[in-house]
Each structure stands twice: as C-alpha cells, then as structure tokens.
Image (cartoon, rainbow, N blue to C red; front, side):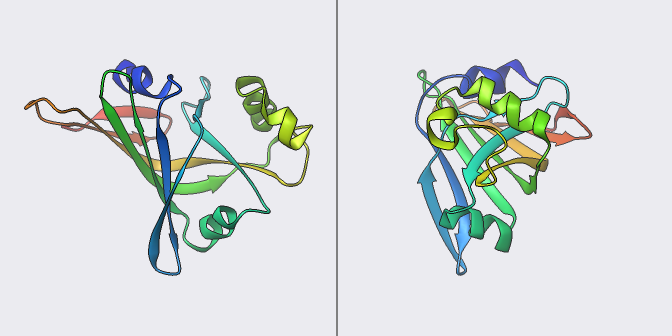
Length: 145
C-alpha cells in the first residue's frame, strides 16, 4: 500500500463511512480500518444488529474518508465484501483490542467484518497540487493520476 495512504489512516483522527439508506446518503463516524499485510485489504467492522449492516447488505458500496493531523485526507470507495474467516476476525481483534469489550470474542456471530473490493483511493489536501488517485486490484495499489 502507498505510504501516502498509510500516513493518513494510521492516526486516530476524524473518519467517516458513507452508505446508502433508502436511496439517500447516510454518513457516520467510523473507526480505523485494519490493513491486512498479507492481502493488502483494508478491513472494517460492524455489528449485525446495526442499521449500517443492513445498509451494507442492501447496497454494498461505500465510501470511507479520513483526515490526517496535517490536513491530508483520503477517500476510499469500493464494493463491500464480508469476510467470516476466523483468521481475519482474530487479526482485527488484535488490531483493535477494544473490540473485546463489545463482542467478547472474534467468533461472536454479531461481529461482522468487511473489506472493499476494487477500491479507489483519492488522496488530497488544501494545496494547489493535484489529488492523487490509486486503484486497488488483485491485492495491490496502483497510482492512476
């Protein structure tokens, strides 16, 4: 993954996830994604009891946005792919230990994780420099523009 993207998403700074709810955008604060070093996938988590989970099932396309402390931001959009593998869920628990306070164990059936397939990442800031656009396919990021 691009160091430029990692430098933004590794901070606990404002982050938001946008879904579609009844044909309208729905944006909410969101936690940090977890980068799986083996696959290059960015993983996110939620609960099957939340409205966002139903929205992800109904329209499996999202956009995640986060801003770094130095005002660089990323927008990551793509198609949601749920992952029920124990290994991926355990990795997320290691990355975000507070998940144990909510779900107790990675095998809790309410605990759902997903990653974005064929993601597109835009990196931008307030400078006059052009934004950078990356595409994620087959486990790697490619700079498009």
